[in-house]
Image 1 (cartoon, rainbow, N blue to C red):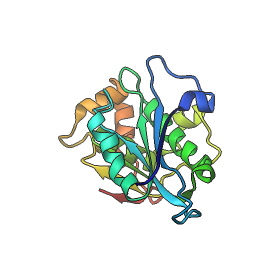
Image 2 (image 1 turned 90 degrees about the vertical axis):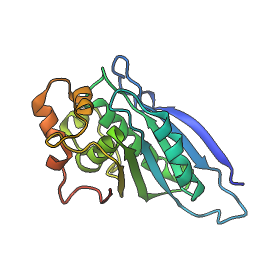
Image 3 (image 1 turned 45 degrees about the vertical axis):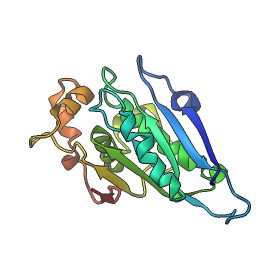
Image 4 (image 1 turned 30 degrees about the horizontal axis):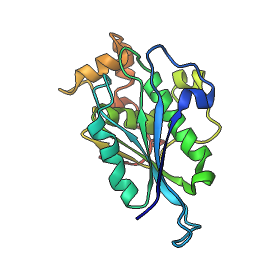
Length: 203
């Protein structure tokens, strides 16, 4: 079988950022050890997995379970355990941006094609994924962290995502992310963020 190497990265420590109280920001990597017998020079695509959980928690059933089918197809997969309530915006997005920066900065080490790094998210993780795809340059994130590489995903996959707060949707996710800040909820409504700059999406 394929050799899987797995390890965990503390993104705050890696990038020298200060973690919010009660915050997470741990990236678990599932990478293929190069196999000298098979296409040793191949540059693999990679995918960042953003689990759901209503911005209250990161659901395990949408973490490794989402990553493994991609790994089995020859992609390297990275699962982000991101900060949730009571930690609010912009920290989950900051951690998603830092994850993309980590993957692209280390593309050479892992034999990853830096132009084939996608992200997938389910439920509230779908909202985080859509936000990463359209708002990776959020002013709040930029104030805390300026990545040295482009962090926009090459494509995003949104699974039953939380998208908008204007039609019946998961209001609890917006509350957990934004507290009572109605203006922020409106700004982070994905329908208000999508533009021609957004990453291409499969929904």
